[in-house]
Length: 390
Ligand code: XIL
Image (cartoon, rainbow, N blue to C red; front, side, top):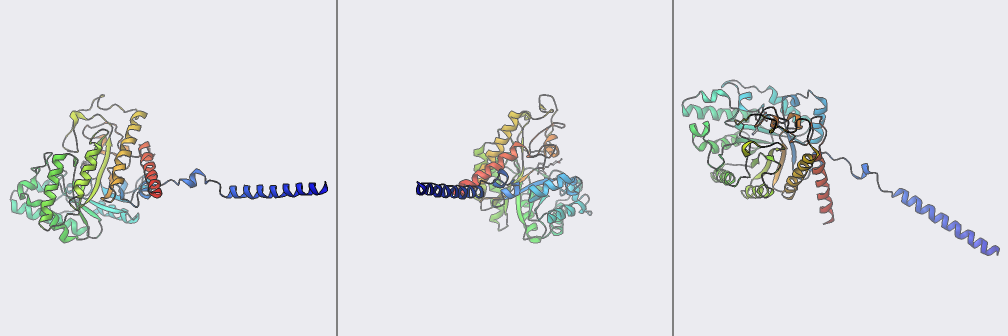
Protein backbone atom coordinates (compact mmCIF):
# COMPACT_ATOMS: atom_id res chain seq x y z
CA UNK A 1 0.00 0.00 0.00
CA UNK A 2 2.79 2.32 1.11
CA UNK A 3 4.66 1.36 -2.02
CA UNK A 4 1.71 2.21 -4.11
CA UNK A 5 1.33 5.55 -2.36
CA UNK A 6 5.03 6.21 -2.88
CA UNK A 7 4.67 5.37 -6.55
CA UNK A 8 1.63 7.62 -6.79
CA UNK A 9 3.54 10.43 -5.04
CA UNK A 10 6.51 9.97 -7.36
CA UNK A 11 4.15 10.10 -10.34
CA UNK A 12 2.52 13.27 -9.05
CA UNK A 13 5.95 14.84 -8.43
CA UNK A 14 7.11 13.92 -11.93
CA UNK A 15 3.84 15.22 -13.34
CA UNK A 16 4.19 18.49 -11.41
CA UNK A 17 7.78 18.85 -12.58
CA UNK A 18 6.76 18.23 -16.17
CA UNK A 19 3.92 20.70 -15.83
CA UNK A 20 6.28 23.33 -14.44
CA UNK A 21 8.80 22.70 -17.25
CA UNK A 22 6.02 22.99 -19.81
CA UNK A 23 4.73 26.18 -18.23
CA UNK A 24 8.21 27.73 -18.18
CA UNK A 25 8.75 26.62 -21.76
CA UNK A 26 5.51 28.14 -22.96
CA UNK A 27 6.04 31.25 -20.90
CA UNK A 28 9.43 31.75 -22.53
CA UNK A 29 8.23 30.97 -26.02
CA UNK A 30 5.06 33.00 -25.58
CA UNK A 31 4.10 34.86 -28.73
CA UNK A 32 5.64 38.31 -28.75
CA UNK A 33 3.27 41.15 -28.06
CA UNK A 34 1.67 42.76 -31.11
CA UNK A 35 4.15 45.56 -30.92
CA UNK A 36 7.18 43.23 -30.93
CA UNK A 37 5.64 41.06 -33.61
CA UNK A 38 4.84 43.91 -35.96
CA UNK A 39 7.14 46.82 -35.35
CA UNK A 40 5.72 50.02 -36.79
CA UNK A 41 7.66 50.28 -39.99
CA UNK A 42 7.97 53.68 -41.57
CA UNK A 43 7.46 53.99 -45.32
CA UNK A 44 11.16 54.26 -46.02
CA UNK A 45 11.94 51.23 -43.86
CA UNK A 46 9.17 49.19 -45.41
CA UNK A 47 10.43 49.80 -48.95
CA UNK A 48 14.15 50.08 -48.24
CA UNK A 49 15.04 47.10 -50.42
CA UNK A 50 12.81 48.14 -53.32
CA UNK A 51 12.94 51.89 -54.08
CA UNK A 52 13.37 55.28 -52.49
CA UNK A 53 10.28 56.80 -50.93
CA UNK A 54 10.32 60.53 -51.51
CA UNK A 55 8.32 63.65 -50.92
CA UNK A 56 8.19 67.05 -52.56
CA UNK A 57 8.85 69.72 -49.97
CA UNK A 58 8.08 73.43 -49.81
CA UNK A 59 10.09 76.28 -48.30
CA UNK A 60 8.60 75.80 -44.79
CA UNK A 61 9.60 72.17 -44.76
CA UNK A 62 13.05 73.06 -46.04
CA UNK A 63 13.45 75.53 -43.19
CA UNK A 64 11.96 73.05 -40.69
CA UNK A 65 9.61 75.67 -39.26
CA UNK A 66 7.26 72.95 -37.93
CA UNK A 67 9.08 70.41 -35.77
CA UNK A 68 6.35 67.75 -36.04
CA UNK A 69 6.45 67.98 -39.84
CA UNK A 70 10.27 67.90 -39.75
CA UNK A 71 10.42 64.70 -37.73
CA UNK A 72 7.70 63.10 -39.85
CA UNK A 73 9.68 63.88 -42.98
CA UNK A 74 12.89 62.45 -41.50
CA UNK A 75 11.15 59.33 -40.23
CA UNK A 76 9.09 58.40 -43.28
CA UNK A 77 11.03 59.51 -46.35
CA UNK A 78 14.51 58.91 -47.71
CA UNK A 79 14.31 61.19 -50.74
CA UNK A 80 13.28 64.79 -51.33
CA UNK A 81 12.36 66.95 -54.32
CA UNK A 82 11.95 70.71 -54.13
CA UNK A 83 8.31 71.46 -54.96
CA UNK A 84 9.05 74.92 -56.38
CA UNK A 85 12.29 76.52 -55.29
CA UNK A 86 14.51 75.00 -57.97
CA UNK A 87 12.31 76.13 -60.85
CA UNK A 88 13.88 78.78 -63.05
CA UNK A 89 11.67 81.69 -61.97
CA UNK A 90 12.81 81.24 -58.37
CA UNK A 91 16.37 79.96 -58.63
CA UNK A 92 17.39 82.03 -61.68
CA UNK A 93 15.17 85.14 -61.50
CA UNK A 94 17.34 87.33 -63.71
CA UNK A 95 19.72 86.43 -66.44
CA UNK A 96 22.75 87.19 -64.27
CA UNK A 97 21.28 86.48 -60.86
CA UNK A 98 20.89 83.17 -59.11
CA UNK A 99 19.04 82.64 -55.89
CA UNK A 100 20.63 79.57 -54.36
CA UNK A 101 19.90 80.19 -50.70
CA UNK A 102 16.84 77.98 -50.25
CA UNK A 103 18.08 75.35 -52.67
CA UNK A 104 21.31 75.05 -50.70
CA UNK A 105 19.28 74.62 -47.51
CA UNK A 106 17.23 71.98 -49.33
CA UNK A 107 20.40 70.06 -50.23
CA UNK A 108 21.72 70.44 -46.65
CA UNK A 109 18.46 69.00 -45.30
CA UNK A 110 18.88 66.00 -47.54
CA UNK A 111 22.44 65.54 -46.29
CA UNK A 112 21.32 65.86 -42.67
CA UNK A 113 18.81 63.02 -43.07
CA UNK A 114 21.00 61.06 -45.48
CA UNK A 115 18.40 61.34 -48.23
CA UNK A 116 18.53 60.89 -51.98
CA UNK A 117 18.14 64.44 -53.30
CA UNK A 118 16.43 65.03 -56.64
CA UNK A 119 16.68 68.23 -58.71
CA UNK A 120 13.47 69.60 -60.26
CA UNK A 121 13.85 70.98 -62.92
CA UNK A 122 16.31 72.42 -65.47
CA UNK A 123 14.19 72.99 -68.58
CA UNK A 124 10.47 73.70 -68.22
CA UNK A 125 8.20 76.11 -70.07
CA UNK A 126 6.11 76.68 -66.91
CA UNK A 127 7.21 78.75 -63.92
CA UNK A 128 9.83 79.95 -66.35
CA UNK A 129 11.86 82.97 -65.47
CA UNK A 130 10.55 85.91 -67.55
CA UNK A 131 13.97 86.86 -68.86
CA UNK A 132 13.96 83.78 -71.14
CA UNK A 133 11.04 85.19 -73.13
CA UNK A 134 12.66 88.58 -73.45
CA UNK A 135 15.44 87.17 -75.64
CA UNK A 136 14.48 87.62 -79.28
CA UNK A 137 17.50 86.19 -81.05
CA UNK A 138 17.49 82.38 -81.33
CA UNK A 139 21.22 81.94 -81.04
CA UNK A 140 21.35 84.17 -78.00
CA UNK A 141 18.43 82.22 -76.49
CA UNK A 142 20.26 78.91 -77.04
CA UNK A 143 23.45 80.27 -75.48
CA UNK A 144 21.56 81.57 -72.44
CA UNK A 145 19.72 78.26 -72.08
CA UNK A 146 22.97 76.33 -72.24
CA UNK A 147 24.42 78.59 -69.56
CA UNK A 148 21.31 78.16 -67.40
CA UNK A 149 21.60 74.37 -67.54
CA UNK A 150 25.35 74.27 -67.02
CA UNK A 151 25.41 76.84 -64.21
CA UNK A 152 22.77 74.95 -62.25
CA UNK A 153 24.35 71.56 -62.91
CA UNK A 154 27.69 73.00 -61.79
CA UNK A 155 26.36 74.56 -58.61
CA UNK A 156 24.81 71.27 -57.47
CA UNK A 157 27.46 69.02 -58.94
CA UNK A 158 27.96 65.88 -56.84
CA UNK A 159 25.15 66.88 -54.45
CA UNK A 160 22.12 65.62 -56.33
CA UNK A 161 21.31 61.99 -57.02
CA UNK A 162 19.30 62.93 -60.09
CA UNK A 163 17.88 65.77 -62.19
CA UNK A 164 14.68 66.26 -64.10
CA UNK A 165 16.57 67.65 -67.08
CA UNK A 166 13.47 68.33 -69.15
CA UNK A 167 9.93 68.58 -67.79
CA UNK A 168 6.73 68.27 -69.84
CA UNK A 169 8.01 68.59 -73.40
CA UNK A 170 5.16 66.56 -74.94
CA UNK A 171 1.59 67.12 -76.07
CA UNK A 172 -1.08 64.55 -75.32
CA UNK A 173 -0.83 63.08 -78.82
CA UNK A 174 2.87 62.44 -78.34
CA UNK A 175 4.09 65.30 -80.54
CA UNK A 176 6.50 67.88 -79.16
CA UNK A 177 4.96 70.75 -77.22
CA UNK A 178 5.38 74.03 -78.99
CA UNK A 179 7.25 75.55 -76.04
CA UNK A 180 9.58 78.51 -76.20
CA UNK A 181 12.48 76.04 -76.21
CA UNK A 182 11.15 74.22 -79.27
CA UNK A 183 10.33 77.47 -81.05
CA UNK A 184 13.74 79.02 -80.49
CA UNK A 185 16.04 76.01 -80.60
CA UNK A 186 14.20 73.32 -82.54
CA UNK A 187 13.94 69.70 -81.48
CA UNK A 188 17.64 69.59 -80.66
CA UNK A 189 17.12 71.41 -77.38
CA UNK A 190 16.12 68.10 -75.85
CA UNK A 191 19.30 66.18 -76.66
CA UNK A 192 21.42 69.26 -75.93
CA UNK A 193 19.96 69.68 -72.43
CA UNK A 194 20.83 66.09 -71.55
CA UNK A 195 24.29 66.43 -73.09
CA UNK A 196 25.12 69.67 -71.24
CA UNK A 197 23.97 68.28 -67.89
CA UNK A 198 25.93 65.05 -68.32
CA UNK A 199 29.06 66.96 -69.30
CA UNK A 200 28.96 69.01 -66.10
CA UNK A 201 27.68 66.44 -63.60
CA UNK A 202 28.29 62.97 -64.99
CA UNK A 203 27.36 61.20 -61.77
CA UNK A 204 23.77 62.48 -61.54
CA UNK A 205 21.02 60.35 -63.06
CA UNK A 206 19.26 62.31 -65.78
CA UNK A 207 15.48 62.02 -66.25
CA UNK A 208 12.79 63.09 -68.67
CA UNK A 209 9.68 63.88 -66.59
CA UNK A 210 6.05 64.38 -67.62
CA UNK A 211 2.39 63.88 -66.63
CA UNK A 212 -0.14 61.57 -68.29
CA UNK A 213 2.73 59.25 -69.13
CA UNK A 214 0.27 56.35 -69.00
CA UNK A 215 -1.72 57.65 -72.00
CA UNK A 216 -0.82 55.38 -74.92
CA UNK A 217 -0.20 58.16 -77.48
CA UNK A 218 1.87 60.29 -75.15
CA UNK A 219 3.74 57.19 -74.01
CA UNK A 220 4.72 56.37 -77.58
CA UNK A 221 5.83 59.97 -78.04
CA UNK A 222 7.99 59.82 -74.91
CA UNK A 223 9.55 56.57 -76.02
CA UNK A 224 10.28 57.96 -79.51
CA UNK A 225 11.77 61.12 -78.05
CA UNK A 226 14.00 59.43 -75.46
CA UNK A 227 15.12 56.80 -77.95
CA UNK A 228 16.18 59.54 -80.36
CA UNK A 229 18.37 61.09 -77.68
CA UNK A 230 19.91 57.79 -76.61
CA UNK A 231 20.56 56.87 -80.26
CA UNK A 232 22.75 59.98 -80.53
CA UNK A 233 24.99 58.52 -77.83
CA UNK A 234 23.66 60.93 -75.20
CA UNK A 235 22.70 59.46 -71.88
CA UNK A 236 19.20 59.45 -70.45
CA UNK A 237 19.09 57.46 -67.23
CA UNK A 238 15.42 57.49 -66.48
CA UNK A 239 11.85 58.40 -67.21
CA UNK A 240 9.74 60.10 -64.59
CA UNK A 241 6.03 59.39 -64.58
CA UNK A 242 4.62 62.24 -62.53
CA UNK A 243 1.66 60.22 -61.26
CA UNK A 244 -0.98 62.91 -60.70
CA UNK A 245 -3.73 60.33 -60.70
CA UNK A 246 -7.40 59.93 -59.77
CA UNK A 247 -9.47 57.30 -57.96
CA UNK A 248 -10.48 55.62 -61.22
CA UNK A 249 -7.93 56.71 -63.76
CA UNK A 250 -5.54 55.81 -65.20
CA UNK A 251 -6.33 52.10 -65.15
CA UNK A 252 -3.99 49.71 -63.37
CA UNK A 253 -3.27 48.08 -66.71
CA UNK A 254 -2.15 51.41 -68.18
CA UNK A 255 0.11 52.06 -65.20
CA UNK A 256 1.68 48.62 -65.38
CA UNK A 257 2.10 48.64 -69.16
CA UNK A 258 3.75 52.06 -69.04
CA UNK A 259 6.32 50.93 -66.49
CA UNK A 260 7.08 47.93 -68.69
CA UNK A 261 7.26 49.97 -71.91
CA UNK A 262 9.59 52.61 -70.46
CA UNK A 263 11.92 50.12 -68.88
CA UNK A 264 12.18 48.37 -72.26
CA UNK A 265 14.26 51.39 -73.29
CA UNK A 266 16.85 50.26 -70.76
CA UNK A 267 16.23 53.25 -68.47
CA UNK A 268 15.04 53.49 -64.87
CA UNK A 269 11.44 54.39 -64.15
CA UNK A 270 10.59 56.77 -61.31
CA UNK A 271 7.18 57.80 -60.05
CA UNK A 272 8.04 61.40 -59.39
CA UNK A 273 4.95 63.34 -58.25
CA UNK A 274 2.44 60.85 -56.90
CA UNK A 275 -0.93 61.99 -55.56
CA UNK A 276 -4.47 60.67 -56.01
CA UNK A 277 -7.21 63.28 -56.24
CA UNK A 278 -10.53 62.27 -54.65
CA UNK A 279 -12.45 65.27 -55.99
CA UNK A 280 -14.67 65.58 -59.07
CA UNK A 281 -12.63 66.16 -62.13
CA UNK A 282 -13.83 69.12 -64.19
CA UNK A 283 -14.54 68.12 -67.78
CA UNK A 284 -12.58 64.92 -67.17
CA UNK A 285 -9.35 66.80 -67.12
CA UNK A 286 -6.36 64.53 -66.87
CA UNK A 287 -2.82 65.29 -65.91
CA UNK A 288 -1.24 68.41 -64.54
CA UNK A 289 -1.28 71.21 -67.07
CA UNK A 290 -0.74 73.90 -64.47
CA UNK A 291 -2.02 76.74 -66.64
CA UNK A 292 -5.54 75.30 -66.42
CA UNK A 293 -7.92 76.65 -63.77
CA UNK A 294 -11.66 76.24 -63.36
CA UNK A 295 -14.48 77.79 -61.30
CA UNK A 296 -15.04 76.49 -57.77
CA UNK A 297 -18.54 75.32 -56.76
CA UNK A 298 -20.18 73.16 -54.04
CA UNK A 299 -20.54 70.32 -56.49
CA UNK A 300 -16.85 70.44 -57.32
CA UNK A 301 -15.82 70.70 -53.64
CA UNK A 302 -17.94 68.14 -51.77
CA UNK A 303 -15.72 67.21 -48.79
CA UNK A 304 -15.05 70.50 -47.01
CA UNK A 305 -16.17 68.97 -43.68
CA UNK A 306 -13.98 65.87 -43.94
CA UNK A 307 -13.57 62.83 -46.13
CA UNK A 308 -16.43 60.27 -45.87
CA UNK A 309 -15.28 56.80 -44.75
CA UNK A 310 -16.38 55.26 -48.03
CA UNK A 311 -14.02 57.53 -49.99
CA UNK A 312 -11.24 57.04 -47.45
CA UNK A 313 -11.53 53.30 -48.11
CA UNK A 314 -11.57 53.83 -51.88
CA UNK A 315 -8.41 55.91 -51.63
CA UNK A 316 -6.71 53.28 -49.46
CA UNK A 317 -7.61 50.56 -51.96
CA UNK A 318 -6.43 52.67 -54.88
CA UNK A 319 -3.05 53.23 -53.22
CA UNK A 320 -2.82 49.54 -52.35
CA UNK A 321 -3.48 48.54 -55.97
CA UNK A 322 -0.99 51.07 -57.30
CA UNK A 323 1.72 49.98 -54.88
CA UNK A 324 1.05 46.31 -55.70
CA UNK A 325 2.14 47.17 -59.26
CA UNK A 326 5.19 49.08 -58.01
CA UNK A 327 6.20 46.09 -55.89
CA UNK A 328 5.67 43.67 -58.74
CA UNK A 329 8.02 45.76 -60.89
CA UNK A 330 10.31 47.02 -58.17
CA UNK A 331 13.39 45.95 -60.16
CA UNK A 332 12.47 48.62 -62.73
CA UNK A 333 11.53 51.39 -60.31
CA UNK A 334 14.15 53.63 -58.71
CA UNK A 335 12.01 55.98 -56.65
CA UNK A 336 8.42 56.72 -55.68
CA UNK A 337 7.98 60.35 -54.65
CA UNK A 338 4.73 61.81 -53.31
CA UNK A 339 3.91 65.37 -54.33
CA UNK A 340 3.83 66.60 -50.74
CA UNK A 341 3.70 65.06 -47.28
CA UNK A 342 0.21 65.93 -46.03
CA UNK A 343 -3.21 66.75 -47.50
CA UNK A 344 -3.09 70.30 -46.15
CA UNK A 345 0.05 70.99 -48.12
CA UNK A 346 -1.06 69.48 -51.44
CA UNK A 347 -1.13 71.63 -54.55
CA UNK A 348 -4.37 69.79 -55.45
CA UNK A 349 -6.25 72.06 -53.02
CA UNK A 350 -5.61 74.75 -55.62
CA UNK A 351 -5.44 72.88 -58.93
CA UNK A 352 -7.26 72.71 -61.29
CA UNK A 353 -9.81 74.63 -59.19
CA UNK A 354 -8.69 77.07 -56.52
CA UNK A 355 -9.86 76.80 -52.91
CA UNK A 356 -10.96 73.17 -52.73
CA UNK A 357 -10.36 70.63 -49.94
CA UNK A 358 -8.61 67.62 -51.39
CA UNK A 359 -7.21 64.49 -49.69
CA UNK A 360 -4.65 63.04 -52.10
CA UNK A 361 -1.74 62.03 -49.85
CA UNK A 362 -0.91 59.56 -47.07
CA UNK A 363 -0.97 61.97 -44.10
CA UNK A 364 -4.00 64.04 -43.10
CA UNK A 365 -4.14 67.71 -42.20
CA UNK A 366 -3.05 66.91 -38.63
CA UNK A 367 -0.12 64.90 -40.01
CA UNK A 368 -1.66 61.59 -38.92
CA UNK A 369 -1.23 58.58 -41.21
CA UNK A 370 -4.41 57.80 -43.15
CA UNK A 371 -5.97 54.46 -44.09
CA UNK A 372 -4.05 54.73 -47.37
CA UNK A 373 -0.79 54.73 -45.41
CA UNK A 374 -1.84 51.62 -43.46
CA UNK A 375 -2.92 49.87 -46.64
CA UNK A 376 0.48 50.35 -48.24
CA UNK A 377 2.39 49.17 -45.16
CA UNK A 378 0.09 46.15 -44.80
CA UNK A 379 0.53 45.31 -48.48
CA UNK A 380 4.31 45.36 -48.04
CA UNK A 381 4.14 43.09 -45.00
CA UNK A 382 2.04 40.58 -46.96
CA UNK A 383 4.49 40.85 -49.87
CA UNK A 384 7.44 40.07 -47.56
CA UNK A 385 5.69 37.12 -45.91
CA UNK A 386 4.79 35.69 -49.32
CA UNK A 387 8.38 36.07 -50.49
CA UNK A 388 9.74 34.40 -47.34
CA UNK A 389 7.49 31.39 -47.78
CA UNK A 390 8.24 31.02 -51.50
C1 XIL B 1 3.31 72.56 -58.87
C2 XIL B 1 3.51 72.97 -57.41
O1 XIL B 1 3.15 71.90 -56.59
C3 XIL B 1 2.66 74.18 -57.09
O2 XIL B 1 2.96 74.66 -55.78
C4 XIL B 1 2.92 75.28 -58.10
O3 XIL B 1 2.05 76.36 -57.86
C5 XIL B 1 2.73 74.79 -59.52
O4 XIL B 1 3.55 73.65 -59.74
N1 XIL B 1 4.05 69.15 -62.57
C6 XIL B 1 5.28 69.50 -62.08
C7 XIL B 1 5.38 70.23 -60.79
O5 XIL B 1 6.30 69.10 -62.66
O6 XIL B 1 6.47 71.10 -60.76
C8 XIL B 1 4.11 70.99 -60.49
O7 XIL B 1 4.23 71.54 -59.18
C9 XIL B 1 2.91 70.09 -60.62
C10 XIL B 1 2.79 69.56 -62.02
